[in-house]
Amino acid sequence: MTTGFEAGALERRYAFLDDCPPKLVPTVITLPIGSLTERVKGARRWHDALLAGRLPRPGTWPGPPLDTPVRKALESMGLVRFCKGQPELVEALMMEVLAAFVRCNRDFRSDVADRLRELEELERADRRKAEAKLARAKKRAARPVRIDQDTRRRLRDAAQRECAARELSADADMVVAWGEHARAWAQLADVFGDLGQMLGRGWDMSMGVLKHAGWLDLLRLRELVEKLPELREVVRALGRIHARNDGETVAEKILVPVRRLEEDRVEVRTAHVPAETRGIERSGQIARMLPVEASMLGHPKLKLVWHARRAERALLTYRLEGTEVKRTWTEREIEVQVERRRPRPERGPIIAVIDTSGSMHGLPERVAKAIVLEAAKTAHAERRRCFLYAHSGPGQVLEHELDLSPDGVGRLLEFLGFSFGGGSDETTVMAKVVARLKENEWSKADVVVVSDGEWPTPASLVRSVESARENGTRFHGVQIGNRGRTGLHAICDPVHVFQDWATAGGWR
Image 1 (tube, one colour):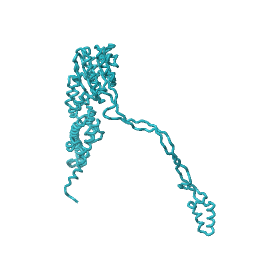
Image 2 (cartoon, rainbow, N blue to C red):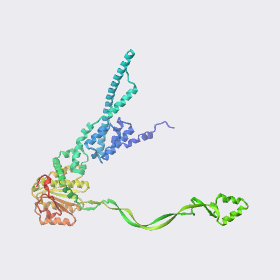
Image 3 (cartoon, helix red, strand yellow):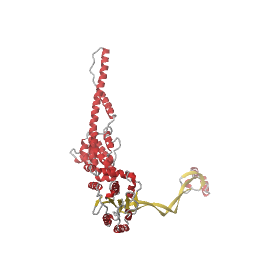
Image 4 (cartoon, rainbow, N blue to C red):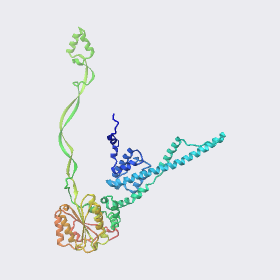
């Protein structure tokens, strides 16, 4: 037996600390709520639940009423949904959650202590009255009143029950610390959809987006897309379907007819399988004869009778019977389900071209930019590349590739907020588009051109578009306004014309 210090035993004793997220360990160790084991398990449950985008189930450490204000704060802010798959955000939020538990615990203990003092004063007052009454009846002086430990324990339990039953509000400090961020992320999610996730959860970045000059325009564009759901359907049709180049496959299950031999089993009752006694019969089987027959073998005269009965198969014997399984093989055709892997299909990139000439000023230009915003959201959600062009007169072409990074959001806002307001030069921008389509990574792209179509279509423009169309590229056109056949019809097929533009805000 050793009495020296063993470092391994100490390490094993606190091995459960490995379950605690590393950045939370110092805080969890010093928390004054529950045992260390309970704190580690509870913090892990909260961390994993928030990382999954939900709250832990009710009753999880520290339990009500300590976690009630925290749950109400998170629910009121709608913050939990933004935590899904965001480990850095969850760790930062968990520090605030643990601090809130400490505040709630301190406030609860203070409330219990205050209520306990009130109950003790009421108890002393009742006992003084009772003692004074008893003293008058016995004609003696009143004795000092004291509260024993059992009474104090009973009063403390009552105070805790009363304080735990009180209606608690959301933790104010959490709402102050995180409310503005939650509102910002909610607005970004409403406008960008899944594209809002490209912001990460950087607080400075999200606030900067909301203060950007183009933010109010984005809010209007979102409302415009809601009024014109046809725009969303146009964007979803863009991009040719093709197999992935990275070798990723998808499994599908199919039914294949096959012929196989199957064994048929038939149970037959037979005496050749002794399994159970079914009665008595006459036979010559010595192993199954009754004891009365065996008794004749000990008598010199009856022994001869026994041999005679055996020769005649007339001995009294047990009748045994069992089940024999007969096997036969039959060939049958059946359908079996097999898994087959094939290349995972995906849609190609999106190239959007919007007209920002003077004739598009106002609502037509906002409709065009609403389509660009929807294209950016769709490309991000489906992990597709997206390239944007804004053009006007000669030499006036603005290019932007959707960049899935925080800086890319700022550039997208600047792109959507830009407008040339000059003439129309479709030839220059389409030459750039056709040149980009010849690049390998953009060869599977589809093009959407958004314009009022009020521009000429020279033969060179038609020929360049036709050459790209021969390679499989589709040119979708979205004509703003009801102007009949325009230059857009010469280079795009199909051309989407929405009849009821009045729903877009009263513009005709």
